[in-house]
Length: 103
Image 1: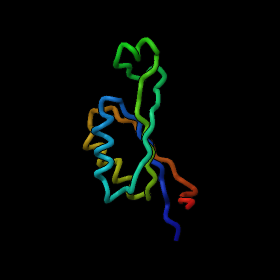
Image 2: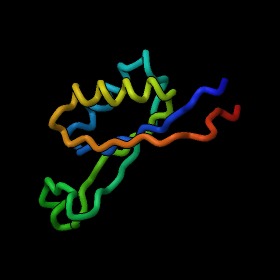
Image 3: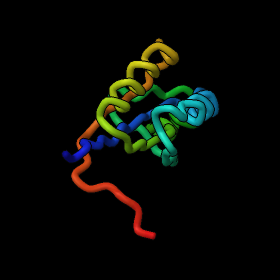
């Protein structure tokens, strides 16, 4: 039987960056690691917090990708919903057709 993997993507405001990264690092029962990078949010719903963001017309964001089994993905989203309620943490999960490490 094949185990279904999902990529959970998170888009976070910069003001919760360290708290989110620390939180994810503590979830060792669900995930072995994750990838984080800089991103910018665009569009009418993007929250522009700083004067610099307002001048640029885009929001500085943190983008996180986590690959994990489906049940762990659901648990992670549930935990994040409780831990970061009100933080405007955007997420989505998408199936991953291939996943592995090339050594």
